[in-house]
Length: 242
Length: 82
Image 1 (spheres, each protein chain N blue to C red):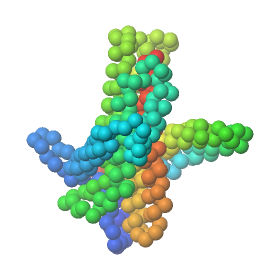
Image 2 (tube, rainbow over the protein chains, first blue to last red; image 1 turned 45 degrees about the vertical axis):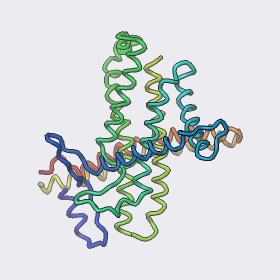
Image 3 (cartoon, rainbow over the protein chains, first blue to last red; image 1 turned 90 degrees about the horizontal axis):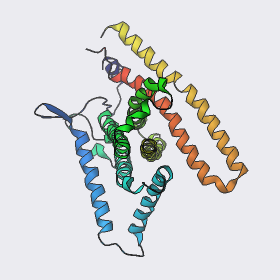
Image 4 (tube, helix red, strand yellow; image 1 turned 180 degrees about the vertical axis):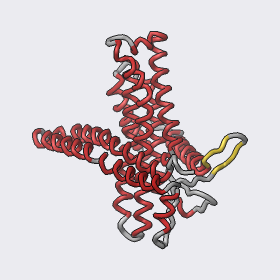
């Protein structure tokens, strides 16, 4: 923080940039980042409300909102069916769709809704995927999911993949088990945090019109990153199931 | 924080992000070029080619992002900061 405080205080500018400050909630021994919990709960409530309102009265010939949600579902099913094949794609639809919708919601809610209007005592409300803890949690979930898929299908023989075709690749395959969640989490975290930081710094320097193209780019990046995360999750599961 | 560590962190952070954009930049340019050739050859397959292109671009982008994360960590969450 020493370097940043020199950099950011040397010029007197009208807006403030805070990086690395979080609102801490202490529950007993654990301390949570309060702003992430608030926005995550908002997203969960929004997604559940959205799904419930559209699907409580399904009709055979879909009208506007039901059509839209069927389009999204068909898009996701195409992704899953491409990788997993016809036989066992149905049981993975809920997991991958939730992953996609949650990450998409997280990325977009930080950009579309003006959270800066709500002032927190410390830190600010923004995308939850801005925080490395959220993305590491999501990628560990994916890791557990592909282990579960492999163990479910093959039992204890799943661990033969470390040794089976070429035994001396054992350390590399072991390392791959560590780098898969690492790369997933860093990709998502880095992209979203970089976009947020770019918008903050640009707004601090030129508050008027310049940050707008970057915000549009952030919307596009948020969509692509959600797609990439879920596509990679499906491909890891497919690799464990073969 | 020791001034020499501050200076080293700044130089390290700038080198990290600067050098990590070279490789993926070249790679993404080549991928986009091949995708354009593909679309020019078969314009009716444009959708598939474009989706594959976007997927590949995101993977290459991630390599630059790894460098950016190291750079951000050195500037904002420096492990030598007391």
